[in-house]
Length: 170
Image (tube, rainbow, N blue to C red; front, side, top):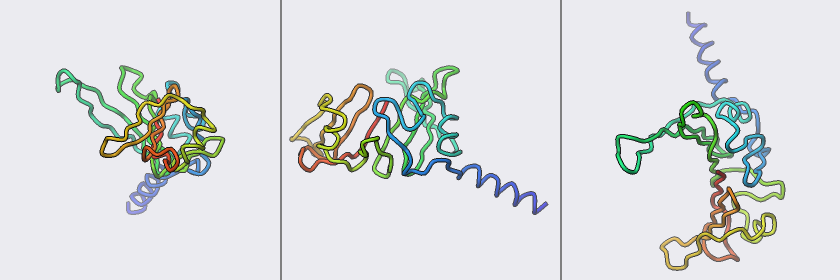
């Protein structure tokens, strides 16, 4: 009996900690996704196949009008890679609609840009984009640039010293 319990614990541990892709090997495809994971097409199962099995987490989002109504967000968090999210929409609750790349991510674009890249490096690789936020009066002013279905957020509003803090692909 003890052997069975140990076997089940070990199998469970290996299943939920296995990672197929190293964080250094993940490639950000601007406006599309990461590696083979494509926004609007890939599912949570595809993410698990690509980056290793993990438990799916969920978070309740209240509706604006009435707090009784809302939707669950299902997501997978991978350290040094990204967070992959989906919102329940009937039977398509597993389709990825958003990828958030944050400070601990090691993912890079083919040009070598990612978290902590400079403003000039991003502009050089991706172009000017649309400046959605540039404020010098807020408490924590930041530059935000939108590229079609991707938002790049920098850590301050000085183009000479700004570094990428977060990338969101939707």
